[in-house]
Amino acid sequence: MKTYLDCLPCYMNQAIRAGRMATNDDKKIKQLLDQVGDMIKHIPMENTPAESGAMIYQKIKEITGVEDPYKTIKQNSINEAKALYPELKEIINKSKDKLLTAIRIAIAGNIIDFGINKKFNLVDDVKKILIQDFAIFDYEKFKSELEKSENILYLADNAGESVFDKLLIEELNKKVIYAVREIPVINDVTIQDAIDSGIADVAEIISSGVKAPGTILNQCNNNFLDLFDTADMIISKGQGNYEGLSDINRSVFFLLKAKCSVIAKDIGVKEDDIVIKSINL
Image 1 (cartoon, rainbow, N blue to C red):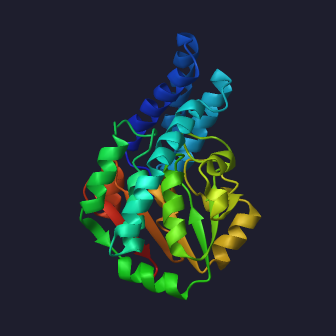
Image 2 (tube, rainbow, N blue to C red):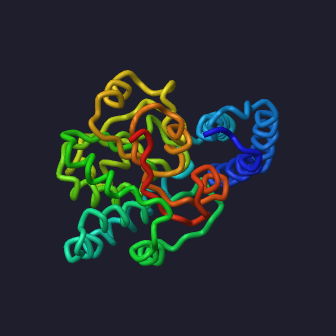
């Protein structure tokens, strides 16, 4: 996915939000905005938004000296999601189609995103998505590929959402490798976040090597790339991973909620729609 003009003001909004989380020093925040503004002038529109995001969050770290501005928020999100886990597990167990319900819940967890300027209520969003119609519903393809697959590469997105991913992984009943970010970026899940979420109980956790808020293949490590090429099935969560992988030449299933108008337009759905979208199948 390329960068759209509407992405540019979003970069500035992300910079000031993360800057204020990292420091109360207005001079540093002004310096950050100046430098991000200068970067935006030179960002190629052919870049994916995730690539541009990597540069912006590196600049935030350089200027503020804070490695993980979202650390407390991530931990709070994980704790909130874990508190919901027993109730959500019961909902899945009582449903007529456990797999589909687990997918819905995993997508509901995708609302935990602090890279966008949108408020959310986790409980309310879960309730809504449990009954919401899908704008793209490649569920039969998903089930068919799952049945044929022995191993799955699961591309993680946000911390807190990772607890919801655990519920889906438990319903897949396959060997799963759960790929996370190399370093903290926005509220994306890292290895420690995944461990805190309980993912180690149901999957092998690896770093993709990427330092961006999305999977960018030319920035991933060789171990991840080997797995990406050989996995029987790839499940990609969230907008950032969609941004980096929507144009690749291999089969992927994207599970996400379209939380911004740019992503919605690129996918061909409306903002706030939910999708199970396959490519190259």
